[in-house]
Image (cartoon, rainbow, N blue to C red; front, side, top):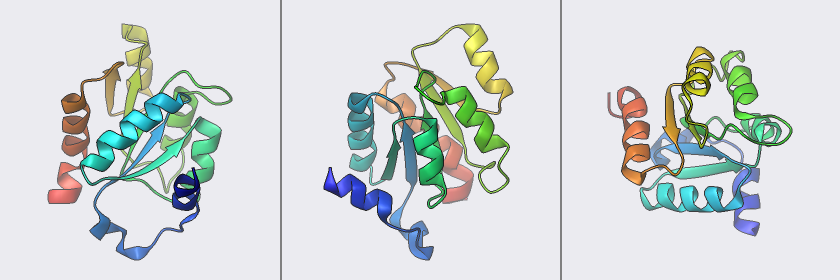
Length: 144
């Protein structure tokens, strides 16, 4: 939509802190992006979206979200590759990452945690779970 394109094109501004929390949702499903964006916006969060890791890296050149929600299975660059990129990029490495995925097996979880992912949630996620994880990860920064 035009509004989303506009949001993506808006450069980062210094008074970003006052606008509350900015969350980036990276998922190749438009439904997941829409549903998650609506949930976060209802809680007064700014939302950036990307359809895969390559798209996310482009957005990250202009904007630094407070937290990132990543799917694992995406075309071009999956959630693991994106998480690795973020953790290996000095100006991004401190962004908390929540992985939300239908791959709930232990080996997937362990691989994500080894890469430095902060939280790992199954799909479909419970709204309260997701919000609690975001608030916990940002607690020190937003309220501390």
